[in-house]
Length: 402
Image (cartoon, rainbow, N blue to C red):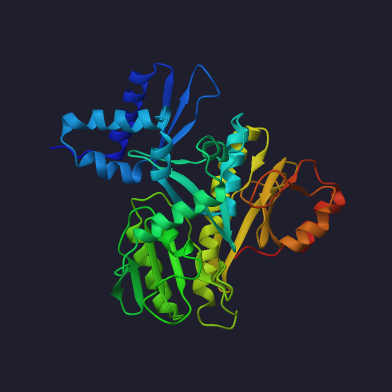
């Protein structure tokens, strides 16, 4: 018996999509574990992104003859979601946790594809928000203010309904201890972190201390009251292992502030836990720059070089670096240092060395190094060739890359 792989699932999604509409095309990205569906007829259709992690578990468990009907039902709900009656919409209201970055990148993706930002209903919880969604049989979709207006429900009322539903679905046995000082949410139903964030001070943690929360996907949520680096590292490892087949959410560690607001957990630099928190911030930054880099490359084409954000560990700990090549129009992520490349030097010796971001910024000046205002995280563009003075200064400042 041959194993039903993600690659086979991607092909089946493509075949089923084409049977629904011959104009639909699919692209499989094994690195992101995604299938993108577009239409050859209209730019206004899609693209839709299907994450294969959760779906492969569901489809591979079915008998072979049931797989295509299940994929068809999923795609029909994705491509042409059934209109819900007022009662059905009310009963489907749920909450998803969102970061500011997640909402901004989603809307920017839509704008680049020729669409418009999606107006949604969100409520701030410090550095996090909860967003109202409609939980359907095969998919989860964003609820727009106009959807609520059609059924005569205010945004505040809808938020209250969704919050109440989540509270009713949360019992006393919300947490189970998985290892010393580490607890995991029992539900794993796509709303585990939302339960915590939406509780607004009524969270029921299995301890009295300050919570440190890790939620690498919406379905996986772990908590601890320990700032031990070993405990934090183990919590992250357990979370990422559990979330391996889930759509990624966030690698940051979170905590609840004194006023009930949620914020990134940042221990003092002198704390033994600082390195553990720093590693998670770097992991999340890498993810965000990879995602926004792909977006910029689609937007800019091949005429402009979009540099990668690289995280490396040297004798001083974790650090970040990107590369700038003289005379090449470039978009650069904000990193601690910049590797300078001079294509005019002999082959094998083109890397001049590295300078700090501050040094790079000072050498170029505000007219040569411009902030790109239309995308996050922060990107800076260098579109014109540098003059000889700036190049010579960078060569003088460059230190060996270790």
